[in-house]
Image (cartoon, rainbow, N blue to C red):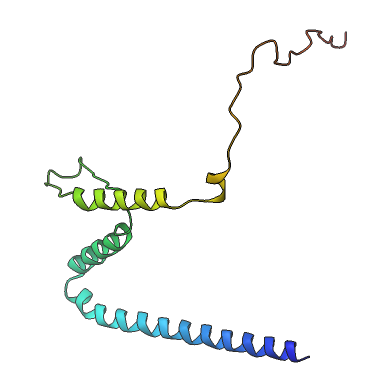
Length: 130
């Protein structure tokens, strides 16, 4: 019985924490909207473009791939090659250092299969109904 009571209390606290977190996130979104609304009413096109660019910056900030749309405009595009190269070398360093249990397993050398060793299918055919 004490286990059930303890579990029930824990579940209640988790639910209360989730509820508070959800309500606080909603209040934050409302505050952000109320701050943005006058700016949008003053200049809708500029605000829309800024929101789009901010969103794209947030989305693409965690990727190492660079997408270029060369057909849309002839603008000069700056690519931070040094940062991209630094990220790639950092990830390869991490991958070389990490070892798993599979890396320590020694495999038997592969022996090629000769045609005489391979299984052959019988050449008998089956006739259908007449």
